[in-house]
Length: 178
Image (cartoon, rainbow, N blue to C red; front, side, top):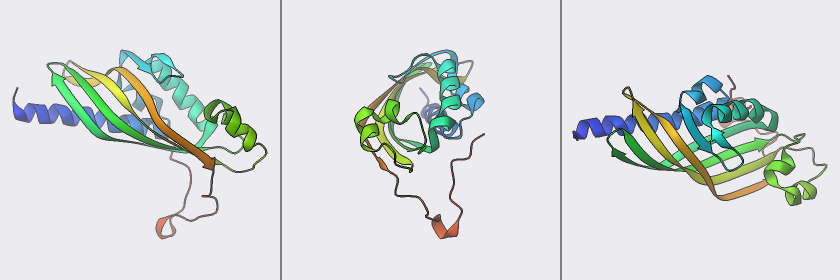
């Protein structure tokens, strides 16, 4: 395979990974669906099924549970074989869970929820893990055909970020939502 073509294919796949992070963080359904093929399967553990249905679930529930999220992928390894690519990437994802969220127990567990019941503060939830993806090129376009997300570690604590101003006085606020 032509070296230049390999670089272009890998770049297209990486851009889809970054697009996924952006789409999840701004809760943009159309942008998130564009990452997947219509028949793609997404396995996030708590959800296994059609990726478009996952996109609908994610983009509608994330704003209810979280003030903001920030997903980042790194250490991307791509192995291309024709029109199929096996892709492994590492993930670090920050979530700021709403103080009044009914999602505290489902996301962080009953032990955490009971220990922090009644606190009127947001909760910082940090996850490290990754994605194991099968990308397919159809009609010259790379998209995810199958995704499995996994968690390697996680930590949570009542937020200490309240009342701070942003870098160089910039206004702090939630992630921009579409």
